[in-house]
Image (cartoon, rainbow, N blue to C red):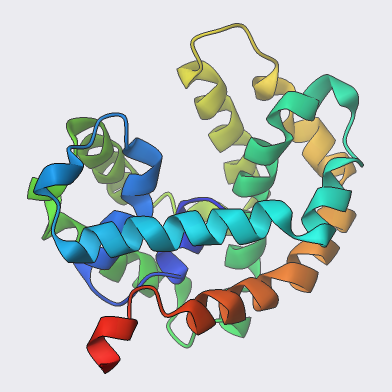
Length: 199
């Protein structure tokens, strides 16, 4: 899953949201200075990815893609699943998408002191552009894949992957709706971030 899904699966506070995103920036992060809320968020992110990557519907979906893109299918799915979540946001959350993302960015800005520079700068850019709320558009999927392609330090064809996403759009959408509610229930049942609050 990508940023929007990880924020959705986090708790309603800045430390949780930062942790759920910081798992993608661990090479730059100093975990020794992180508060418990962020560490639990990192664990929650890992559990989310583990469930997603091993779900039978997702593993089957990977085989549908053109072998030319096989190396980058996990990235393509992460980004497109965020689009699917944005597209069907009202089915999963009572707050409107734009309001949710603005609220999340505000919470994240309050705990910036714990973030590595790369994470802080990227989130500021995303907030300025309203990037997360724009995931409702397929155009954002294309732009995101191109942006990731440009960040990869070796030659790759991820900047051409959007055409394959369009080709597989129907099966990606069907797969998302098959597994995402199960993911939500699984993460809630683990209580990674809430167990100590309930004891």
